[in-house]
Length: 98
Length: 194
Image 1 (tube, rainbow over the protein chains, first blue to last red):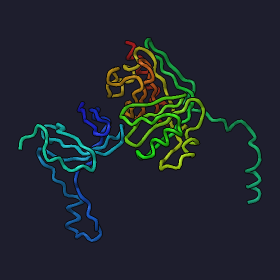
Image 2: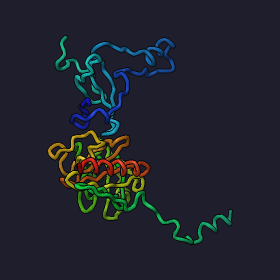
Image 3: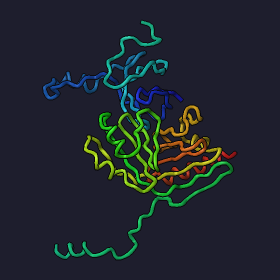
Image 4: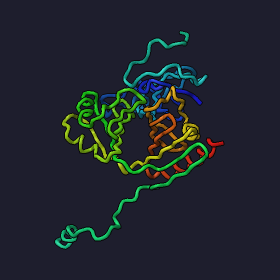
């Protein structure tokens, strides 16, 4: 079983307590009604789906119930790091080249 | 209309309105574990920002814990940390924590959930093994010490787990799940006894 570190509970917890909540850092337009259809499609449907490092939202559903962000490698399924919701994208990732 | 109002004021006729807690009094024993349903208690779900915590702690008579996976207990009242601004308050002494919170004017949300939950005590040398039959958390004493509390899962349901002694756990679950949880723990206790 994967262990995921919850930044609010400050410890690693079994994956069964967590839910994935899609890609992170997708900003909703302040004027959503004024968006063109193409821009709305990009915001609403189009996701990056990279091979490698991905930034995701996760929720500690059956724990503290809080949303947080996680950096995960889609190839190895390893969690690189997790950080609280609202914090900026980490500029430097531990243990990742580049 | 007048008739309905008159009927409302008439005294309750029979004791058929008696409340029946789910699974009341049920218990089961295996070689090293005892699983039993605990008597009803007052419960409250409390949400509050950090600025309100001190005033609420004073009103409740128990200091709301601010560290993850901890609880605080005083005079039959226990406050369990569930999230950064969320607590479960259980009162076994019979006084109503909702009434205490109502006296406080600071911002908070207190919801009575006394009859939403039931509590099951798992006691004995095999208590941790019994719960681990369906709970993926590490329940060893150095990681989950006495007084530790956490919302987690047991099999397919969500539970709130509180370690009240080295070999005693209190399992809180929703009453509609209680049959499943009790059966799950009973079977877990049989496995733990092996």
